[in-house]
Figure 1 (cartoon, rainbow, N blue to C red):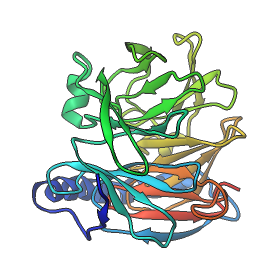
Figure 2 (cartoon, rainbow, N blue to C red):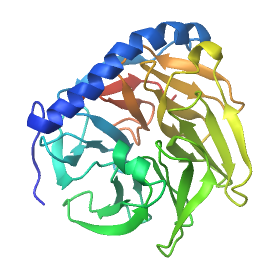
Figure 3 (tube, rainbow, N blue to C red):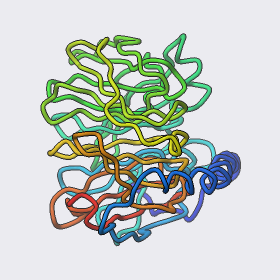
Figure 4 (cartoon, rainbow, N blue to C red):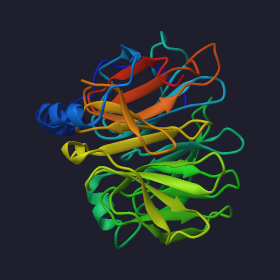
Length: 320
């Protein structure tokens, strides 16, 4: 698929859906954000925040590849369906890499650098996904946009994480469990019980899978991959931040987690010991956060957040 220049805003039905969700988030965020700021202390010094792009629809997930390029999903890109977009550097205009995707969800890379893209990431799909798996994964060429349907039968594919051995995990924030896909492409439904799991990340040792929770008291759960019945709470904010609606999750090589606190309008950093600090406040419904790579494009010392309001936001030195 050929790329096209970025458009200023989605249209028609998709725009209406996106604006409805964004409006709900806008109304809730001030209510949640104020008490949350009392419960989650700010890091010192905080990163410098700037908006790199806006008007991109309802953005769901983000990831940076080995070349330092940013990829993200918009669920309302053409007014009817969603798309995967790419930014080659922070000052570049986003371009459509692959359009016509129904409710695109989580993103990950395989060992060849191919992009794994969740589809079927919608509230109704997630609810149905508790009974019948209608979601799946696309395999997408990050340069040409050529794609194929690779995995079907998942509950939602909201969050996607891939282990070093090729195992893939997919979440359903409207569901009760995390699904697992083995290295041969076989789907194992209801692999681990984590209600309303959203963002997923695997720790540097490969022993644990972390999952943030959205429609549950704010927490990040830790699942022992070799024994998925062993689910513990890795991090939880104070009582005033329990309704922060945690969303996308990323992890660095030291085991520090970065999570989008959607309802609170914040990005949090979680240390390996579970302590939490806010890196940014006052964002417009952040849905995911990605760590940069290299020093030429989306820098490895920076974080890059996407929001339900269609913004790409840079947190300079957020990953230092």
